[in-house]
Each structure stands twice: as C-alpha cells, then as structure tokens.
Amino acid sequence: MITVLHQGSIIAEGDPETIKNNEMVKKAYLGEK
Image (tube, rainbow, N blue to C red; front, side, top):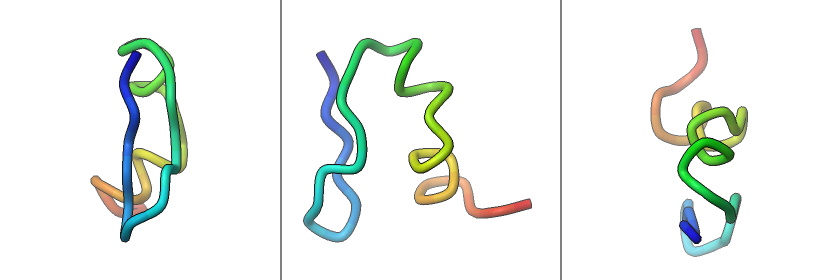
C-alpha cells in the first residue's frame, strides 16, 4: 500500500498501479498539461 501526501493531506492510497493512474497524483506531482 502506498500513501501519497500533498501539502500535508492524503490525496491517494493504493497499490503502485492505482497510484500511477491517479489523476490527482499526476496533477500534484507532474503539473497539468
């Protein structure tokens, strides 16, 4: 299980595949295209 934090809040939890495909994680860490 992976937990992703952004600015002190949990924005996603799950296995690596779930995290890789999560739109909130992509926006928080990669920015918007």
